[in-house]
Length: 229
Ligand SMILES: [Fe+2]
Ligand SMILES: [Fe+2]
Image (cartoon, rainbow, N blue to C red):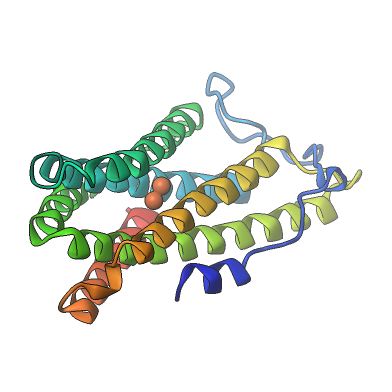
C-alpha cells in the first residue's frame, strides 16, 4: 500500500466539540496520587495499550534513523541531511510518547530492549547495503506504521463516539481528542517519510520484495508484541 492508498483510508470525521465527555457516571478506579485523568477502565486500558506500542515504535524509528545516519554521515554525506531531517521528526515523536508514558504511568513494553537492538541493527545494516536499501527500509516501516496509526485513529474516534453516547451530556474527555489530533499529525509525518523513500529510489532496492516484506513482517511482529507485553 502506498502513501496515497493509506491517505485515502484516512478518517475524515473531525473530533468536534460536541463529542466532549465528562465521565460523570464513571468512577475513577485509579489511585488519586497517580496523574491519570478520570477515564473509564476500558478507555484507560485502551490508552495504556496505545501509548505502550507507540512509544516502543517511535523509539524503534528513532534508532533506525540513528543507525542509518551513523553510516551515511561517513559513506554518503550528501544523503545524511535528509536522513537527519526524518530522524529529527522521529525524535520528536519518541519524546512525545515518552512524556505521555510518564503522564499516564504506562509501563514500557518488556520486549523494548530486544526491538531496540534490532531497530539500530536494521538502520545500520540497510544503510551499509546502500541508499536504495535504506529507503526501502523506510518505505516498509512507514507503510506499516502509517496503517497502524490509521487503525488507532479509527479506534479512537469510535471510542470518542461511544463515550459521547454513554455520557449524560454527550461530552468526551479532552484526553482522547488531543490524542486523536496528535496521532493524525504523526501519521502524516510517517506518510511524508514514505513519500521521501519512494522519491529516493526505494523501489530500486534489490531484492526489493524480500527486503520490504521481511521488514514489514518484523514491524508487525514488534507492534503485536508491544501491544500485549
Ligand atoms: Fe514516528
Ligand atoms: Fe517515520
